[in-house]
Amino acid sequence: MKTAISAVENSFESKIDRQFARCGFFVIIDQETGSVEFLPNPNIDKEENVGAATVELLNSRNIKKVVAGDFGIKVKPLLDSLKIQMIVISDNSLTVNDIIGMLTKTRKVMPKMDGTGPDGKGAGTGRGLGRCGKSSQKEKLDQLGKGLGNKRKTGGGQGKGKRLKGGSKD
Figure 1 (cartoon, rainbow, N blue to C red):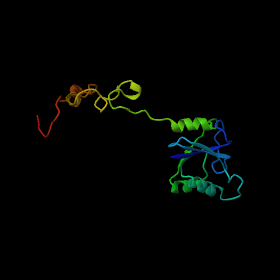
Figure 2 (cartoon, rainbow, N blue to C red):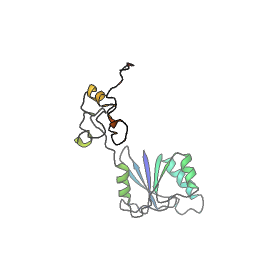
Figure 3 (cartoon, rainbow, N blue to C red):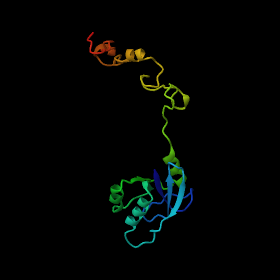
């Protein structure tokens, strides 16, 4: 997926440009290949239809996300119709490098599904009933139905301690 960032200059240390259509440069990041391209905005000095021309330019390059300080009211429906996501950055002190870091940050997942968890620190979350827990299927079934609602006035939260299996009613 490709993302375009509006920038004042053609450098990684450049600040994000507040304007979308009249920004100085677009930094185009291809998150699949990791390539980065600095594209001068040819529409910066146009008299009219600047927004439409800029949207057309980015659409021709298969951009799916655009990061800028603000988007004009005429540009928003154009980007929406082309299914290009708009990301508004209100912090003017952020650089292109900061935005690239935010965009490429990956979510931590259970890499091996073996109970080691993210970064090998263990499952440690939830009730241990998921696929990453190291308990057996019987232990997982025994854990169900044992509530901890003893703060209320009804029954102490221990539940019935039973789990209905295969339609049997114990």
